[in-house]
Image (cartoon, rainbow over all chains, first blue to last red; front, side, top):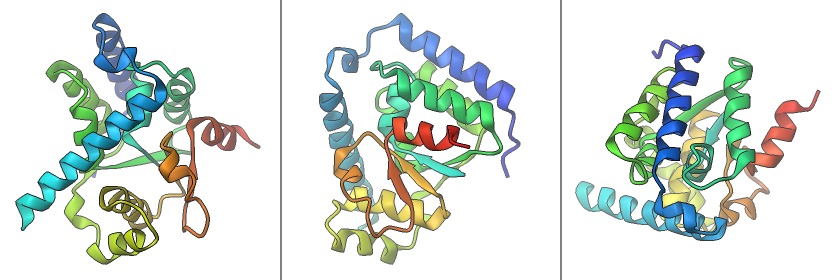
Length: 55
Length: 139
């Protein structure tokens, strides 16, 4: 079972946001719809790989 | 209230693509814990990973490990996923819906319109960040 530590969680979230702010993600230039479409495509690809591994 | 955040919510909440309402939602969940908690399946963590550097992913895992735990995809009964495929969801989306049902979560939070238009007749709510935030902040 996870030992919840909200203070640590917030620290890591803040660091993660600092890191993402330092470099420009390819997603940053996309519209919201394009981002969602890209993530959906990633989901389909990952799912297909999982299925291929199991069969 | 138990929540499952879709991968797009994490991407927006981390600032990879700016959407302040999603940042606000994740901050609010942390601020109101344990009133509101989260669960996350392996698939969503892998989707997030695809958009992060190694260093960023390490922080993401530390964030999750201090908040909840990652459920392996294999724990979700296959039949549950099939039920959502039958009502028209793509297999991977059907898995996410099945996962939300399996966890007993109250809400799937997503900006994905393909999910949002299928909110009726489910055992959980499907809300975008804005509506979820309103729900959390409602008395």
